[in-house]
Length: 478
Ligand code: NAP
Image (cartoon, rainbow, N blue to C red):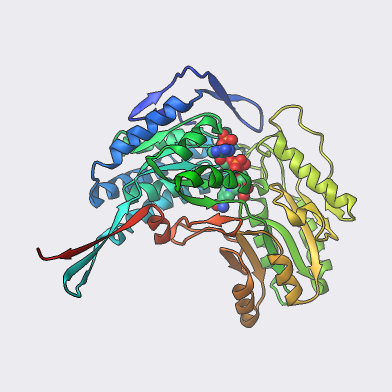
């Protein structure tokens, strides 16, 4: 595991504060992994002021390229240690944690190739102006708030883009999973990122979040997390007219049409649904399958899911680790109970005992059939290893069911018919769409939500511009 050094403010590791400490525990075993200092108002203000000083020191594009490439190389060089750190604090299987490290490194590598987009653009006249120049200036101090489900990658997406754009970052990782963020700050330090360009705050969301929202030097908050907290940030920043980039909750539909390649659809569904134990924003929350193929589909799905193994992520046999904490367990259990009470049939799974502690929240992979739209699993993000399956008769019904949600992050459909695929793509209101694939985003392409899944994009050159302020200089000869 990476050494849990503490918070990182203005180029110094902070190991003690007057506000006490908190423990980081392995969600599989309860083992204490670290005891870290809690940070509050004074540390947040110190981090913001350090960032404000740091970003105003110009950083040429070549320097930014060196930082980005340095961090990418170090992430890859420390892949095993980082993967172990992710598994220990988050619980996901080690092979998924390795993939997360590579994915995170990809953002630093990608943005290092996109810096040319920040070169000034110039346009001629008309007189009396002789030249127009468009500058992609850094947004300035940016607050980066990240969730626990991809403790390294969700931060890497934001931090790589912020660094490339010339910003200085004040980071607040999720309380259960700060160790990957500490490792990333350490690698940034080793890669020559100057003091104050990256600052890391540890502890509960308040008062850190409140200070980030109201401090005038913070010009942008990039947040990944729940829609409920996203709404709170919107309200808290409104009086200060602050920019937000919000990557919020999802409720992904997975449509299987009668002409689909069923084995391919099943492979994609298993990989997509059970990554991180179903605790990803893009993972399928509800499956709609054409009624003519429902029986063979459900039989094959149940057979595959029954073979998945739940356990400690460090065990190479494990497919599904623990849920992050007991509250997550309670939510999943409540969704399944609600579905069964409303007439769903459980094809795979059982009622596990409620964990005695906040750790050890193992939930068995579950398949539900005869699912209807009134059930919680069809209305809210479950965030667990549950596959609810409903049937449909017509393409029109399938698309309407998929869109029947306030969320718009990811959607998947399986069909061999290109004309149908075009209709689906045109009508599905989701920022990320998979046609015959359940694959997630890539560093090269912009990812983000529609509707209440948020706004702003991460990845792609769009993700870089998210951290810039266009400034226009009109010049006349004087
Ligand atoms: P969360 O409860 O919203 O927390 C996310 C982050 O916000 C954590 O760092 C949390 O800190 C912090 N936070 C909580 N309340 C805050 C406040 N009042 N002010 C400032 N920060 C605050 O979400 P989560 O449970 O960690 O993550 C799961 C959610 O994230 C799901 O809804 C999932 O869909 C979504 N998600 C979306 C994407 C995407 O790209 N759209 C990607 C991944 C996850 P603490 O941990 O210290 O409370």
